[in-house]
Length: 309
Length: 309
Image (tube, rainbow over all chains, first blue to last red; front, side, top):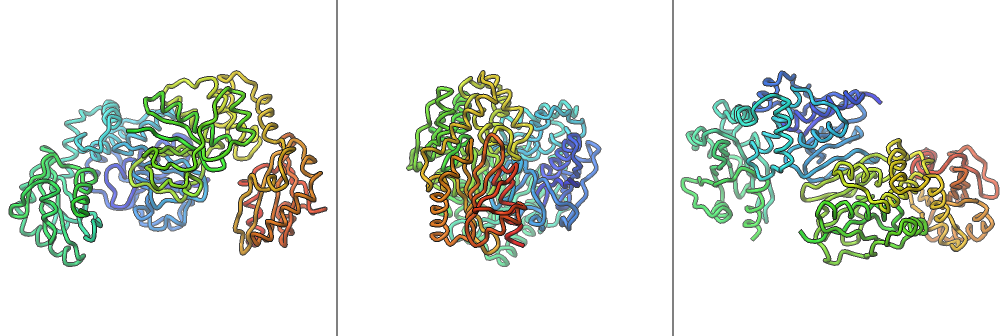
């Protein structure tokens, strides 16, 4: 067997990058020639995490281009989220915590998915099952992934297993979870150097709700005023997307990682749906969504219900 | 959460039935209300295994019919192999050792697939991970599944992990692997009460190879003469299927579980492909395929290559 590439999804977040590093390391220890790679630029949070623990960023690739015959996917399985020429290689393993869709193999494989908050939590178990020690710097990277995906254990996607794994990893990495975790989240929440266009597109997803197309973007901040002082500029960027994409609603959630509330900016023909879904009144196109941090669990389902009704 | 049904594939074999029993037992121990069911009649091998270890056959169901909202699949994942109304329920877990195809979920789930010879081998690991003891009778049932899927460790699908699991399970079940294993395989290899039609359809699969449709059936025996004395009757049944289904080739593999060779009966326009694929000459429509026991690994690939060439 030749070399195997290990990678997370496109537009990689901290879990996608560090899980590739952690699993490639384990595979090397078990005698496989594996290399972690990434399918896009590092965000600032991930760069902070790697720097803190003295890890190199994995090599960035655009496509497999015949380099290997076999790959391992972490933190994703859906084809459209993976490398562009995924159909040219054989997927020998998957370790993931998402739903399964648009995924098919010709042969049996190792597939490990668990409904936890972070891929790193599953990888920690797999290290233990193989009785391989997690090096200090890799423990730090895995901890960073859990902090990132769980917003320091505040997200409703976070499970008891994630909290337990994070505590054990913090001990190995020799850091204080809360101090380091907040520093890392803050590094990713620095919006000062981002353009309005970047703010609303860096983490934006499109959804079909009833007959309407809705875009929901999210950004983490330590103070929502850092974005709200540029509200006019941000709204102009949102309006342009509405026109370009024919959206009925653009919802931008500015999530405060210190208070764990979000400020919503809502623009479009269907803003009333936001008021109904969250029982709020928009004022100057904005409203506070108390305790809302998860798009997947706290925004998409309620908004879908109102839009479908 | 209400009750959860646990089941293997349609036309259940020993792994499909006993893995449902074993996993439902573990889930009950872990506090879930789970019931093993089956999607078809027991074959004689499985009936022998359950009787030996004093286990009841799981209840047979045709469909979910609104009985539960959540199910656990073992030993399969492809929709067409599952319960007819699988789309009306949520799949909360899968434990399997096959390729993944035609499978999709709306939500994250626990999915555990490993490229080993038998689902029971994976279940044994999961018992250990949860630190739950395997009762004697369930260990016997799990051992039966490994013996069945691996043809007593002779199949090329069998891995070191399967052998290791079987040995440990035999110790818990307090049986001699080889003595019990052969007895069980023999119980499934009694062809005396089967009609010619049953012999060629009980384990038959259709394949598209190049432009041709090919049917490959297999039966286990302790003496190939038990089938060959009825060759004329069997060939008549095969010819009828060729006409009905427009087949270019019908290959019937009579697998001797004592010698681990198969005797092939080949009928149809493309029997030459069998001669080329296995480097044999058909005589009276038959040929011995030395060391061939696995349709999946030793028949389908070579025959496909010849038919495509």
